[in-house]
Image (cartoon, rainbow, N blue to C red; front, side, top):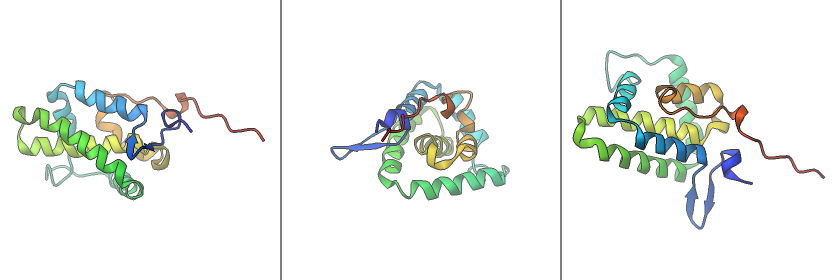
Length: 152
């Protein structure tokens, strides 16, 4: 099974190989100007980040679903957390601590949503990827070629 076609991560030699859409998302973060990433993160920040913001029930449900799905793949979650944290650390000198935390949280949630999209479902995926939808578009799964089922 090709993970780059199906979106499922594959473990090879103890190392997690990420699907192409996840790598594309991380590369999109790397190329994204810090100001744009920060604005996207602050607009989508959780109430703990910005007390005056309220999360919708759809956002809460998407995050709850993501936590359940991610719990089944702790290696994937850990790898993405490290990669996103590294990208935020590069920008840390240009932004404040609260901004950096919001950027990390929002980007990690979106990256993880991209990685587990088939198990997450399209509604939850769209909700979690929304802060980056215009900045780092991800191909619709209908556009991704599916692996042919094996004929008996």
